[in-house]
Image 1 (cartoon, rainbow, N blue to C red):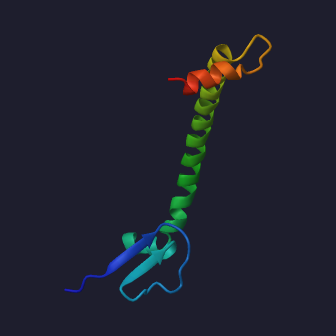
Image 2: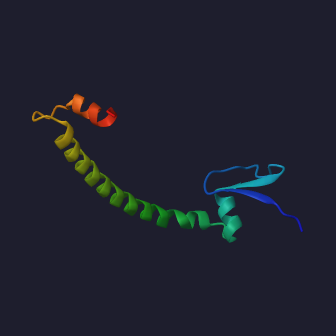
Image 3: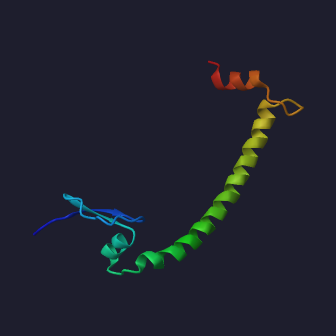
Length: 97
């Protein structure tokens, strides 16, 4: 029985997969190797892209809420009534013993 090491890469192209001690399969070659379907790499793209967009939209909403929350907390704690940063208070909070 011969065992061959395979370095699989989900994307890209390497037209010289035989590296001597191992094979490097990229993109279509990798997906075909693991599935026996030479078109799997294309079939995966559309659903992955749709899911990535949905997750990205959810992430951006959550991220924006957190930025707003941290901004309000920072301003309340480390800014004066004009909105200027009270550097002495901030540095003391961050670095005092």
